[in-house]
Amino acid sequence: RRVVDVVHACEARERVYYCAGAATLLTVRAAEPDAELALTRTTAAPPRPALLEAIRPRWLNYRFGLIDRALADRVHAGGHLLSAWTPDTGRAMRRLIGLGVDSVTTNRVDVLCALRNARSPRP
Image (cartoon, rainbow, N blue to C red):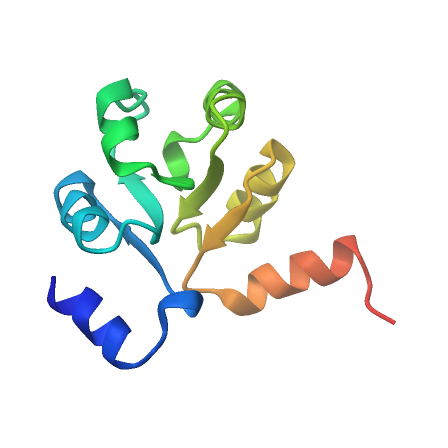
């Protein structure tokens, strides 16, 4: 609840999305019905439908090693965006990009930017 209060005090609601586990996001959703949420998952098992209904996340956020084609297809078919945390090698990032991951959280932004620039050079 305190984080939501800080976001409100800073008038940052339009620039923030919350990424956390189910218990935290249930609290955020109760305090901020319109918040953009990313539900962090630590297993490849799909979230329970009742949990998805209660949290209403836009994103499902998985540890990068859990993501394969079937998971990416399932997440997208369910109407969610797929984010991956924390691939720090070019090889892992290339694999995720190839699977259609929508967002990557990494400690190596330089590597991610180099991959992006190699795929679509900027003028």
